[in-house]
Image 1 (cartoon, rainbow, N blue to C red):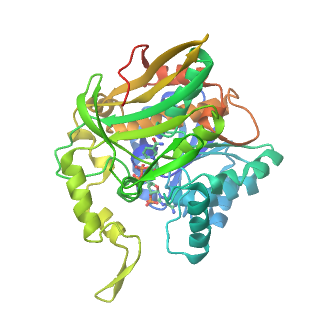
Image 2: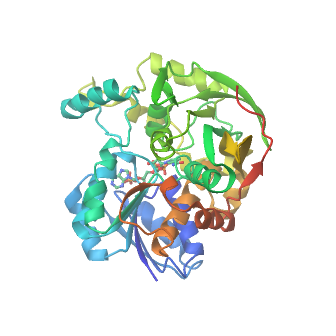
Length: 419
Ligand code: NDP
């Protein structure tokens, strides 16, 4: 028996909510809240006759702490699932602390306004000290560790696929396969085709900000930063085939470097087709990825927000996306004094996802882990006070839940390594 407040009702949230409704013995009561309440109502209505979970809806602007506090106090949830945008992480964490409720999200904090001078000063100091220049980093949310610990509450950060399952794979490898891990390569392959010349699979603004940033990896105790898309490898993915992949900065590298300190190198690669890269470069070159407002015919517009309005809604890609995703981690290290390598990954089919929850596989592979992470917190399988990343919890019950709810693992003990 539990009451859960889900903030956000986009592509990922819709999957997480549909999956929660498949486990109505745990998710007995669910409130779906976002700024556009009509979207929440439409989803609630579509699930009405299909689940025993009692669903209500609410309007909330999660940029406003007071509004979130008021909603939490009136609904009295056991857990708040933040599946809105990274911009709302801190306001929702503040509201959870004020109301004494557990918190979780799927992406680490990033400010909406990267021109804010107060934020910029802290960001520039962090760039110099840490050595990577992505706009997002964990320092903002890790700063809440003592507050959550002292309040006896849990905040679970980044519980999607990557970040999320990839870290559970690391914890699993450490627990069952290795005494010490030497290298981790996280490989995110989307072999799906939606038929558009250019579209993003999750929120376009967050996605384009992430992939247009300089790449970086962790090596010998520090960050190595490289120009965006300047390290390319080819890899032959199970069930997908040969793909080009590029080294990106990614948030889970930061927490894995901290939580698996013996690791010598951690890299993250994502596959991109040439059409995506050409479009992105062109949009970047003409200034369409900029987050700085410009004046256009008397109106202030933010170029990347305008671009978002032009691009297909990721939630609409479901019916037209065919093919598979393959996301996982390749490890090298030692077991019983011997060198070994190990690959753990999931393959997910876009059309199978659409048949089940009316969504493409990117939202599916994020929404299912969010639901399984919520289940870990609600059933007490993950139960400690403080702010935690996924690899800090026991991976076994989580991977069991993923297996049961649609994201089974595949393994290889003789993988082709990435050069
Ligand atoms: P969408 O843009 O589809 O959905 C975002 C939702 O948040 C919308 O329902 C929007 O509704 C709501 N929202 C935005 N601002 C506010 C606000 N101020 N107050 C209340 N609600 C708000 O995004 P996705 O579903 O694609 O992505 C959701 C999250 O998942 C993002 O944080 C993304 O980074 C993360 N993600 C994580 C991945 C992982 O593997 N870990 C992979 C993919 C995505 P409205 O505008 O009506 O309020």
